[in-house]
Image (cartoon, rainbow, N blue to C red):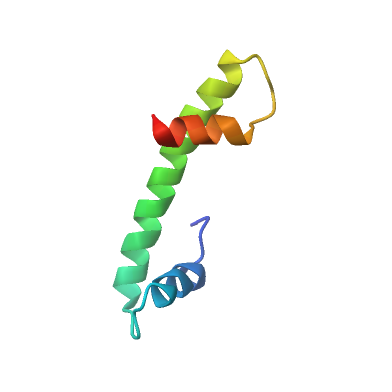
Length: 67
C-alpha cells in the first residue's frame, strides 16, 4: 500500500499547471516520490544515529537532502 495518496499526487500536479492528468502519470510520480522519500529517510536516520539521538530532527533531513 502506498504512503502517498494518488489524490495528493494529483493535487501536486494540478498546482504545477496540469489541467488533466492520467492515473498512470499519478502512479509514476507516486512511485518516484516514495522511493526518494525512503532514500532520504534512510540517510537522515544515519545522521540521527551518528549524533546519538533517537529523534529525527529537521537538520538530519536537511543534511541528507543536501548530501
